[in-house]
Structure formats: C-alpha cells, structure tokens
Length: 136
Image 1 (cartoon, rainbow, N blue to C red):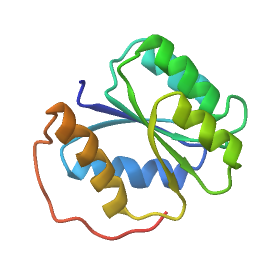
Image 2: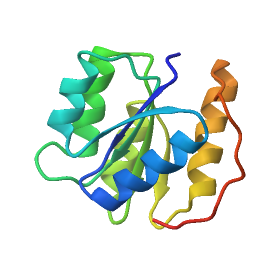
Image 3: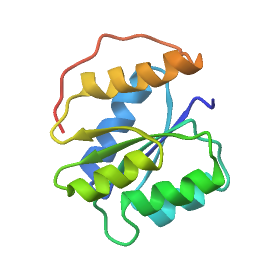
C-alpha cells in the first residue's frame, strides 16, 4: 500500500486540518477540493488511503469513490460526513469504504483510523508526535 493519503473535502478548514495533523505524523498528504480534482490526482499518483466527504458539489463522495476504485482497486477509503443520508453511507460501505466518520470528529479519531488501516497493511509513518485534540 502506498503511504500517500488523499483528502477530498469541499471545506478548506477540513482539508487544512487533515493535512496538518497527518503530516505531523509523517504521512504524505495531498488535498483536493472536489471529486473531479481527486480523480485527476489519482490518475497520476498512487494513494493508499483516501478520506472522502460524502456530500460535495459536483461529484459526491460515493461517485468519487467509485471512480477512484476503478483507478486503484486497492485504495482504502474512509468516508466523512456531517449530514449525509443513510443511503449514501450504505452505498459507500458497499463499495468498500473502511468506515464512515460522522462530523464532528477530532484529530485523534483521524489518526486512529489511519493507524488501523496502516497497521493492517504494514505502512508506517516516519514520526510519532503526541496527538492534539482538534475537532472538525
């Protein structure tokens, strides 16, 4: 599994939180503001994990996940949402999403989720700073 993490969310603050938190733990993080940008990035880079907001303008997170899985079937996906309906959550899980994190969530939940995925795949971060609690 690649050590690169893709974060797709239409909220700049969420993208920034993920980038800053995961980078501090030694992960290489790329952010995208929408599904189209995420797909374009995935065509040229190998991501091991993607965090996808379910509710976005244009392609939603489920549509984006479907396209990303066609590019890289081994991609591990984590869905994030503040208000998506049960149908989109169920559909994303049926497409192979690892879990759906409901907003608000903290940095510790992000790190624990990445560790659960990376421990199973043998992907290790380079550094281990103490997590700080921030809430999205």
